[in-house]
Length: 165
View 1 (cartoon, rainbow, N blue to C red):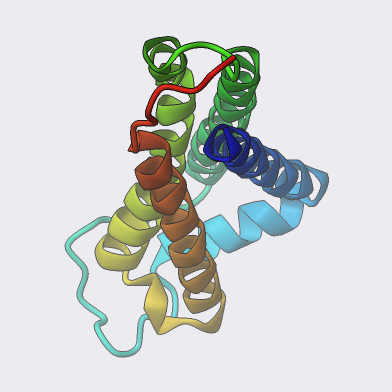
View 2 (cartoon, helix red, strand yellow):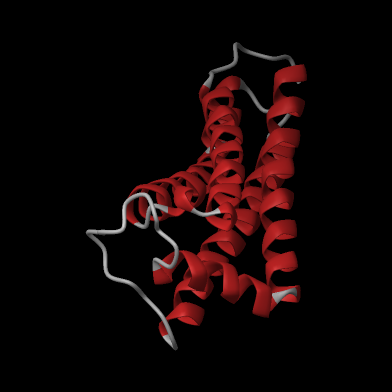
């Protein structure tokens, strides 16, 4: 039974983390636009100054930032909904609890997509954000967040044996 409580708590924590980060980004919208715009502009890419992806600036920066924000919001809300469904199924038989995991898995998977896919793949590899102090800091944090999401997803994927209600 402890695994069910832990899985519920971890999914809930992941959802809360996503929402706290996006709320802070929105509260500091100009700084968020500046950080996203700085990376996408390819400014100060001194080590590898030739880039496969095009620089993005101007009105597209808020669009790109809001794509990130919307995925973070979705991650947070879906994880919290998934945690609620796990909580509701905590006393169910093994098949019932397993069936309740779908939303939580989707939320944890979105966390990996946001912080590994968007920041690691597109930002890190595509826009070479590791070349600047701002980008490197964001990339390092995104690595931690994607690993946390993946660890929650792996733990969540483990099946429980039958538990007495």
